[in-house]
Length: 364
Length: 103
View 1 (cartoon, helix red, strand yellow):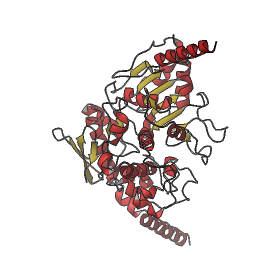
View 2 (cartoon, rainbow over the protein chains, first blue to last red):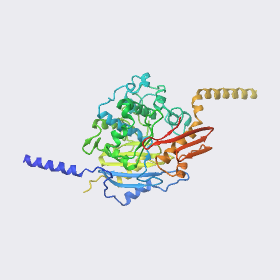
View 3 (cartoon, rainbow over the protein chains, first blue to last red):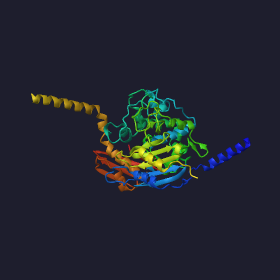
View 4 (cartoon, chains in turn green, blue):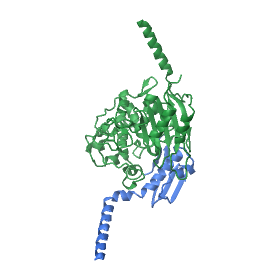
């Protein structure tokens, strides 16, 4: 009897292992669904594109992975499957995932002082790496893009006063709060992490680290990550990947840091990415900050930024509509690249229609 | 009487304006650099990282503030942009490094 159960369990395990798909050089493809739910998704994502006024929803790419298989892919505008697209602030979550590999190599601890790896922060001895991952450095940063360019810290960092050394520019800001107390979204916080990584992995390895640690193990062949003049990765803004390659990072996250039979990133690192920052208050941003990823649930259970998506949904999000959504409960990874200039695009609306089109039934 | 009030108000406004200019002097000095630096950098990345056609990239980087001069050296993968009296250049550094503003 017990032998029978053992055999049964083994058989089940073998079947499960065989059923798990992973991309090799290319993504395995699955049966693309059709019908009214796909049409509804496309009507939203691929509304007629207005290149003259640049108004409305302007999707460049939409790609859906379910159960590790490519089940939907469509491009518009100038983008195609071979084009590495600017991810803007998705870069922040990519940097956090690169950090995950260093975390697995036991090169740092989350409660280490940031100044230990980036000495210009010694004015802020209590600031930890975890505070930076929560966008809670307490530095008086102004994250505005084109609407308030005069006082925008991020515009000054990327294009004028900070562009030679973005981390040093950030470290020069005064504090408005002690570290770890208040969420304030900041591209500067991310670039402090990017600079700290230089000492965490060592200057000799740093320039290639995102490739050796993350991109190459995932089979990503064409990634660009621009640096400032001091050689620090612009972790906040300037990573470029094809939609298919960004989806590989999504699948890694969906499967808790595992790639094939290798645990590339420790499970507890992914758990940190997905743990809501306890001090976040409703309305402070469009989604809930975790450890440099965006969540659909808060420490306060009434917070649910995307009510039409499952609560375990999490995402990497960027300017002008860039998004990598991961929904483990539906075994979905969705990449959406865009060129939205007017903010009319809604994550919740896309997720609602995607959930209807890909309801997460196990395919035979 | 009204003239005096008007003068007093004008003076206050001027003092306020000078005060604001003084407080924001660092940001104001850097402000005119934004448009040429932004355009040079993002155009360079659009052309040589995202591999898009020149026409598309000119539209992609267009902002409401106009630029006065635009020079692309295709062989060097280098772009120089003038706008609001300032000039900035960006250059493609390599497949992994993409584009960077020149000092």
